Amino acid sequence: MPSTTDAIRVQGLDKSFKEVNVLRGVDIRVARGSIFALLGSNGAGKTTLVRILSTLLKADAGTASVNGFDVAGQAADVRQSISLTGQFAAVDEILTGRENLVMVAKLRHLNESGAIADDLLRRFSLTEAGGRRAATYSGGMRRRLDIAMSLIGNPPVIFLDEPTTGLDPEARLEVWQAVKELAAGGTTVLLTTQYLEEAEHLADQIAILHEGRIIVDGTLAELKRLLPPAKVEYVEKQPTLEDVFLKLVGGKQ
Image 1 (cartoon, rainbow, N blue to C red):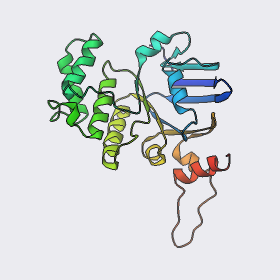
Image 2: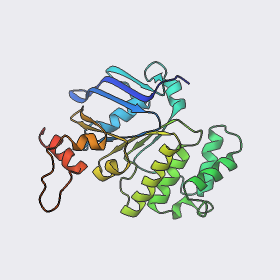
Image 3: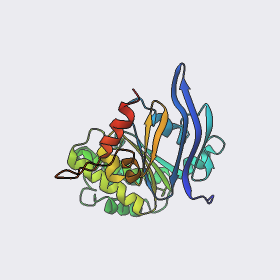
Image 4: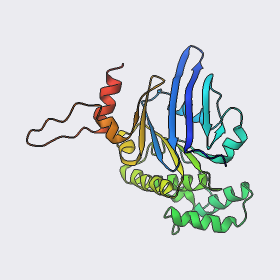
């Protein structure tokens, strides 16, 4: 495996669809074993960037590498290094949770598919539900199963494209815990989201993508320092990520 401190590196990435400039000179760096949140409104270009990084789409200009491999020139190596989970859980509802995991492990030609399935069921707190059909799962359970399926083969980098879309608050918390455990185990997570609270709760680093450009990139504490100091009255109100986002994006419409 190529040795680099960055799991993902993007420099000057451009992408247009006909007359629409979706990405315009995007630069990001994601440290290994970290959770990186890409925050932006609908149409900001988040999914386009993920599709380029996962080799599903070619950039017009710029460079990108994942796990030390060039996305354009070493696409097969990139695909071996990643897993991509979209906005909707891609589980087979007819199969049980365990059968879904065993099926994916067999498709990837891995030995001991049953042991792999049992380990992932345990890691994602699905052991008791493993024998039930996925059709009976709650939204949070399906999403956790979907993420578990994407980890078969131990990819060092995982892309989660708006993983909690449509989930209720309890299910969202379940997914958040699963994502935290991924990073704690050394997996690099690039998370796209529209939910400010999600980025604030999970991410080691946050980038805001607006109109095809990264307008700010840093830790939550660094982003909060972009706003004026809090006024001290009876209670000192600290800025939230929502305050930062609306200040930066709202002023650029």
